[in-house]
Image 1: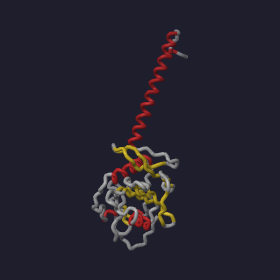
Image 2 (image 1 turned 30 degrees about the vertical axis):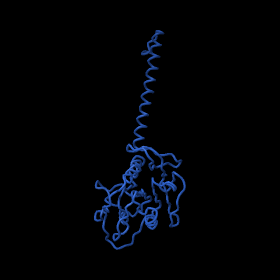
Image 3 (image 1 turned 180 degrees about the horizontal axis):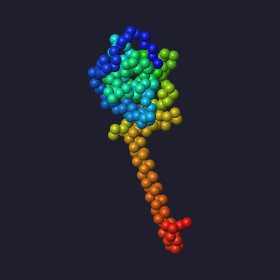
Image 4 (image 1 turned 45 degrees about the vertical axis):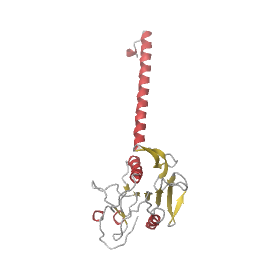
Length: 239
């Protein structure tokens, strides 16, 4: 929780700019966070104490421009206020820092490994995640955790985040008709959570298997009834 001791009143989210008018220059900057949010909407469908923002401004002071990560996750806040939803994320209104911030590196480098890292570190964001699919000699996914006020790079893929109750990692898969490496959520054992498309497909497969099982049972019952009739026994009048 945050305790902002500044003069009141400060502007609300409705009074602050909700866009920095900077266009998203990489489709992956929308799709990658979009997939993570789509999984959460199913995984945490019963929970109303979280918010996942995509390309949304985080205001930490009314006299400073908003920080606009590709995505962020806050825990312990209202999932939505009303049907208008959030225009931006205002720290002195929410009183809760994002626990998780994601930056997807675009072809135009935007200081994700330097200036932005320092900004999120100074702000006190617990996990800062950077993903760059173009990296070859260094890890494409970096998970930085705030330890004693400094970010420490966490080893492994996926990386478990106990404060969130989720792990994050990357692997090849298919989403929105595109097969490539994506970011996914994982459980404590490193098992990947399914995407909405995969869950629909799995449900359809289970339904088909159940239908086939029911058909086999019905056929078996029919054969048994026929055998009883051959023995002079009426299967419909068994006592």
